[in-house]
Image 1 (cartoon, rainbow, N blue to C red):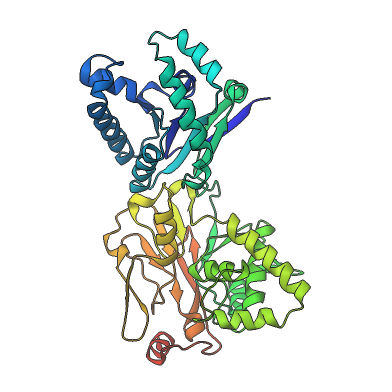
Image 2 (spheres, rainbow, N blue to C red):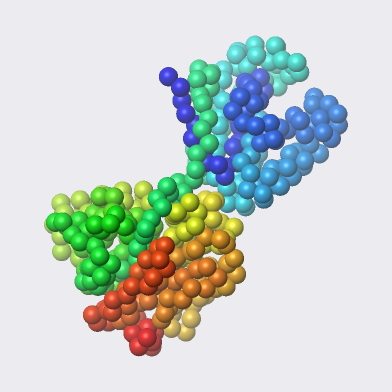
Length: 428
């Protein structure tokens, strides 16, 4: 039975293993020649001889330069070197992260006797003492590679490597869904307003599940709970819809903070989380445990942004730059949750964020929330549909592809950390 290595199309694939283990043969079987950057070939480029180890410093400058240029162009790249030291792997991981690529490590865990035998049959034979040293480094590497920060780590023994097949797959953010959609901004526990909005959009409910008779789908843009009056109920409504196939979801920063709290991590119970926690404390231990398990599974299954309608639409909580679309990395995950935060705060205590949408020139329409603004306005093919419902503003939906705005007013001001802000949003 074959083993499938599913590799996202924007990945840096790092091969790791002793000389003679068949890394290059494996790479040639599953990747195009132009996708493979080989340290041996770079040594030949600079010195005419692959075996000229004295040329290795210059060869590795070319090796990393070629990788850098391919990643800059968004091309899947295979780094074919031994990569048996933590520093070598760390340097390649840094390159992947610099370009927001997925980092995939494939370790060839072959025994020394087999490597020595395979090496003896190669055109360029490596000294046996070199392979012995490679095996020592391999043993050290096996104890650390899972902690080094790679997105995927595959460790293949000889039989697994023989049976393995490589499949280049879309990123998990690329959804086949084409719409039509109703994208809904930050709910923040405003359950009554959410039900009002769904009704205005033509949704009905059968039991506790909301659905649209014409098969439209809701896209929730995160921050389902915190700050409002019915946080757990709003979260449960969204989870019910997603699990029934009637909605999609991207997480917000408040979702992440709730997940941290439910996981037992130390988080600051403020900025609205205290309201959700009070609701949790009113549940029985069994109910609280069931909610925690369900929400954590829901949150961890979610992707930081969604590419929809064959790339014409992007749904995200806090924002995304044009160059980030179609890539995935920890930096992008943070940007999607928090926007382009500077780390500073306003006199009112709110975070200062750069206006990333001002520079956006992408072809995809980006629909986001996170930062409450008085009016939803199309700007540079982006639109912010968080109109601060929980602060007395409105709960907003964008109908897509119609680009029609549908809103319902807040029943009251539920959360006013800064009175001037709440009043300004509500007044609009």
